[in-house]
Length: 360
Image 1 (cartoon, rainbow, N blue to C red):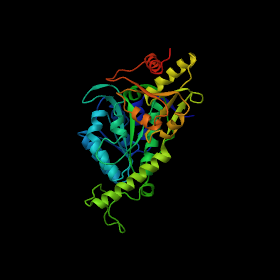
Image 2 (cartoon, rainbow, N blue to C red):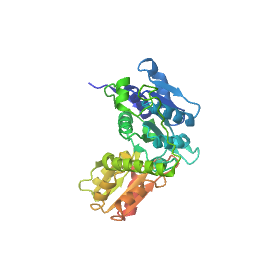
Image 3 (cartoon, one colour):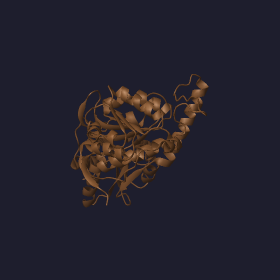
Image 4 (cartoon, rainbow, N blue to C red):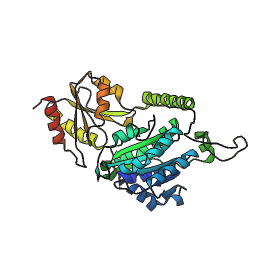
């Protein structure tokens, strides 16, 4: 029987990293994700699995340590919160440009600037649209529970190595701080040297007879070389869009109205859907689980079924742009959000929904 433990979402990240054979964690403390490193330090995995856990002197240092570890084909990760991720954006762009796999956890807080330590979803544009420089994307996973936080670590590394790309686990502060029952999956040992070479034959492994040197870089001095590489990246991102878009649906079979929400907002919207159904209003919910790639195809299909859609977000309206692009005018798309760390209630969302749709 699988072991179940009550823990915070942030703690689930750390426990999952240990149990899924992560080789190295490099980070810097910042609220509301500090429990990730605190849990790793408490568990001391360097004594049990050999995992390296290191507090860097800054977020900039930690993402560059991730770059170095990723060059060797190791499973390496970092975690931070919104302002810290801003400092990492250059490094994430470098990782994408060098086609290096890694996991970056962002437990969002309110901004801009230092903002508030309260929950937010206002890093959607920063992470989904590519906050660093250049034409790149990272795969973005949006957990909605502590169990997701645990499970998405393993899933994130699978995708990172499959496509040789950074993966961002984008959680709002509520999901990071809330305590829930988490089922621990089967322990995975760290990869052996032979398994590492099989999983990452491109990696820098030191001087060998058939490889006197290996340089992994994102630098291209000739414009034609850079253009061909960029085209290669775009082809990879197209494949990711076609194969990896993931979402869940709630009460959409006969829905006449649709909410679109991710993370904690999706959980709140489930209660809204239930309340509206009791009032005879056929509402449903689509929760994007991957924010890149986005659930564009399914939203386009549902736009032909429903009378309207409404994007619910803890920000000023960032995901709603992607919902409107998916719908392409097939039905009206509304938005309701709160900012500054304020959380909406189901009644607030229901009132905004009725106002948008002229319902009593």
